[in-house]
Length: 362
Ligand code: SF4
Image 1 (cartoon, rainbow, N blue to C red):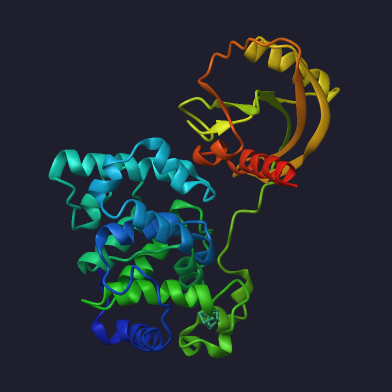
Image 2 (tube, rainbow, N blue to C red; image 1 turned 120 degrees about the vertical axis):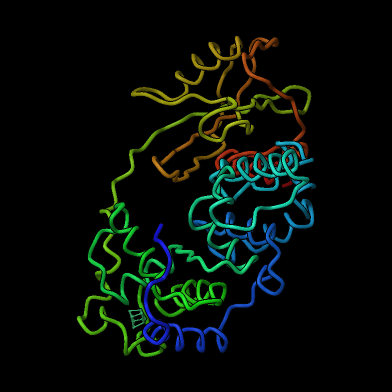
């Protein structure tokens, strides 16, 4: 992250003045902006990372009702927190929010630190979130460069250093800091974010942009080449088969291990597929995981989901149980279909639960 701003005020204002004027005329109305309370900004900024605003807003409202303060979040059970986060993905963010809330309560009665430097000591708070909370809620003159601001700044200054590199990040944070108008960090940071979200979008509307006369990428015709990104890697594909096992009108779910992907969440028993017949692998896998003999019947459906580092394809089978006792090594529950709604599940397993609900409702 860059150091203090160094440009004289009149140079800063070349960009800041039209940017802030535009912001006051066009800013997006968001619930945590009116009276930016640090906990609300924190929750909103963590939720908004890699999630569309329209998607995260209902989650944000529900979360703030369920956990209205640091203390309320700290007092919640992890399963409640994961359940409230379900569907947003990246569950480590929810876990970090929870851990940080507990740390704040244990260390200072739930009071949040006021500076970006102190905020960064909390789990899950990086440079961007720290800058956003410190500037929006406490008025500290620090930049906050999110993906939208990255796009604006790299075009405005025609930055050709790849933005995922340390040098690229350093340059963008330094530019954001240099042009930050003293005492107005909250508006300036939000203005850059809003401009990137609405005008300087992947297909920029330069003719509507308040900064068009200052924009180097526009002058050079390089808008669509900025920011310079790492070429997208093709994600590997992984196949899975899952079984829906019934007993007295209830289905079996298992809890995932406490670490790793979707840690602590619940799933239908499944195996990762290798070459060969899916049903036979499911039978062998469930016998070794649960000590149970099953007979997969009709396929319930196929489901897909893209995680950050692989694409998952899941085939699901209704399974008859040829032996009754199960001996799973992990925590398990037999639940009614309605009961499944109370457990936190990843996207794929929730889709399976929804499909079961639909089938049994019809
Ligand atoms: S002129 Fe175009 S490319 Fe430059 S900042 Fe504005 S919208 Fe982005």
